[in-house]
Length: 230
Image (cartoon, rainbow, N blue to C red):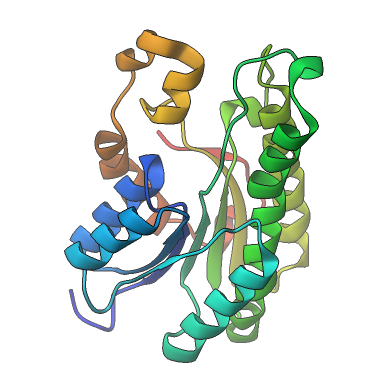
């Protein structure tokens, strides 16, 4: 793939699940992946597997100071992202809302909702200045419906839907912000909720083969639309 058509992808949560699968598929297709995650070991594995122009760093998206430093370093050496994907998320253990501790509730809010805002805060101004680029914030089926024992997670994903649609109204022409339901995929997160029945759903790498072309095809026409992969 030539430099002219290669896209720069900023992707959070690259160390496992959907993020890892996306990072590998974007890289396989020749795009530059600038990713972050919290596992130092897995970031090291990605660095070994993928050299220049890819870039992987240990970052906790819930920490605004870390996100700011990461964004400043990347934007100092790379062009603003063509595609910004807020994928990083955690889920509470299956429990009724009143059984979820304050600390666990805060962690879900901090990663899934504040983390999205932190990444937007430090990357989107450069995209707005260029007046181009697509921001995709991962929602969920539980961002448009609900279920028992995952109330904190539902709250964050409903929040992502509203946050993204409001952001879409603030962007200049030529840009887009999209809340995206990735679908049901067999990941650690799904297994924590579904147990063994998660095996009935596609693996992350199979999903990524469909999701990456879908993400790359998004344009300003989709601004503000709540979409679902496949």
